Length: 328
Image (cartoon, rainbow, N blue to C red; front, top):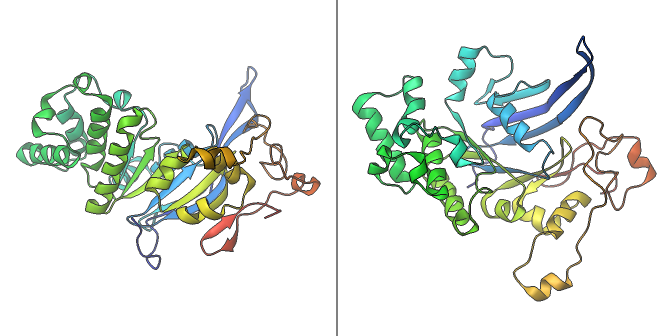
């Protein structure tokens, strides 16, 4: 899955912020902001899977949309293939987006129920003027077979497929343009447990065959462990820890990451009973009114008075292992 660390990154995100204004009154004055993403930085290399994990509302999906240009960043920079993505006009953004695709959580709502799946897969190629006629039909057939479906499935409608098959169709549409990066936004969370592993294995096989990089967004750490090379843990719009996957699971250093890991069920009942779970107190604070200092301090089991006064910066504590915590 991983590529050389000596090569320049395929995608670089630097101090990215996405704030949504809060407006009130007859004049719709701005009285605050929802800080969905509040200054995160990470990079993804060709052929690599970088996972973003965290609770719902932490900013994972918004980060993915900002990378794709679907939402406009408030501040910071997104660089893809060495070119800046922020501030592009519509035509330039569309050209850049040819090499970037997305797989959404719900495959049924991702497909037009009135279009045959072959038309849905071929539509991006037609709209962008990439292929037409026999060449387009061949590409549709090829990508259907790549994702484990048959060529004749192109003539069926979405309702004629199971949930897992529909997600295969969505993946086929995403790879039809032969992108270099795919944002996977909770791609298996809406599927039955019995077929999740099939879709994950398909994504990994396509990565090996086509050299695709993934930004993999999930709240399920057991899934992330199976597919990712590196993991960024998000909390309230911040990345609080980042490490290679094996190191994160074996030597996590941030209290929030440790709490998430303690919630994973172990296959060994004895080990599960012997393990001490970390239960976080309280609810996730509102991104419209985040705590001062460390964003996690209101729920942190080891927080001290100083944590309220200064936001910890993401700093290196070991090779490729970064953490934002005053006490680590």
